[in-house]
Each structure stands twice: as C-alpha cells, then as structure tokens.
Image (cartoon, rainbow, N blue to C red):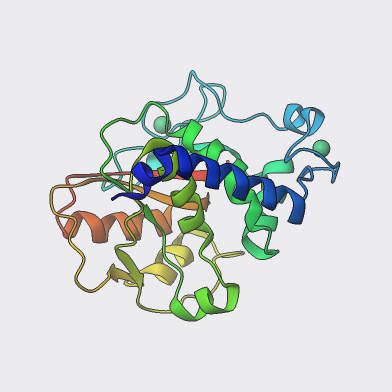
Length: 238
Ligand SMILES: [Zn+2]
Ligand SMILES: [Zn+2]
C-alpha cells in the first residue's frame, strides 16, 4: 500500500490530524518573519515579500516583472518552479527549517512547494536532493526529503530517494557560479539498486542559487534513464 493511499483512509486522516495537532502543541506556529505566534507567516510579512505568481516564464518560473533566468537552467532540466524569492520571511523560514531543527515547518513549507508545482502534471515521483550520509546524521533529517513527503502525501506521488551524495562538498554559501559547479561536479550518483528508467521526476530542494546542484542531480537522473526531470525549490535567489 502506498503512503498516499494509507493517508486517504479515514483512520489515516484521523491519525494525520492528531499528529498535526500534537505538532502544534509541541511546536507552536510562529511567523518566520517577525516571530508572531499563531501562524507560520503573518499577513504583513507575506505582503512584504510576496510569493512568485503568474504570469511567469513557463520554463524558469520567474515572474514576468523580473528578468528571465532560463540561461542558468541546465539543459537536463525541463523546468524549474520556486515558491518565492530567497528573501524576508521565506529566507528566515528556510533557514529555521534547515539549520534550526524547526522540522514542523515541513507542513506549511511543503504546502507552498505543492502550490509551486501545481500546473506540472504526470509526475511519477519526487526526488529529494540528498545530503551526504555524515551531514544527514549530524542534522538528523534531510529537509528536502521532509518536503517531498509532505507534497507527496497531499498529491499522492511517492518520494523516491534514488540519489546518493557520494562525495562530501563544502558549503556552497559564498562561492561564485563557476566554483559552485566545480564543487558539486561528480558529487552525486544513483543510490545502489535504484532504477528510474522511463520515469518523469521532480527534483526537490530548499533553495536554488545558481542551479549547479540541481544540474548535477538532473544529469545523474537523465543518464540513468529518466524521461524528464523538472525541479522545484522553496526559494530562489533572484
Ligand atoms: Zn510576521
Ligand atoms: Zn525563463
């Protein structure tokens, strides 16, 4: 039984509702932007940094009032969608989710990501950008996988943890585009025994800066036989 179907049953829905209520008790929602209690982002913070909205470039997903970034997108990526700019409350939310153990943000942030993927049909699976095993152990979770699980549970698409980070890379923060490409070159491969032949996949990550990580992952999936690879990130540096 797939996870999506399990959550579709009455008892599954009840268990999920109970789980979400428990999360609310243990981690009361606070606005990522200003810390106000009772919501994950308050109206004034959201209004200050709005999410991306159509009309946007159908390939790179950048709204028409900003410069198209298709030139930075790897040929292996059919399209990229991001919920909004890496700025303000969304930047704070991503950092808290990724580095400050605020895993309860997987629910509201996953719902943002699902919105960004809304008009992308026919996906067979969601592929989280993997962490190196050591980083994954230190952090205790892969934030991209938590996002995939939330999106997948709501739209009935499985998380396919098919990629492996074979080489530890230094943090991309502070590196230029060329240095970022070199840093992730050869860092990713297929996880042993996984097969993506003929699948249409969405790569999922928290932030896209220059696109070098998504490009490296997409190249591995295409070489392994995926028929199409799209990508979705919560935030994008623009
Ligand atoms: Zn706020
Ligand atoms: Zn574009």
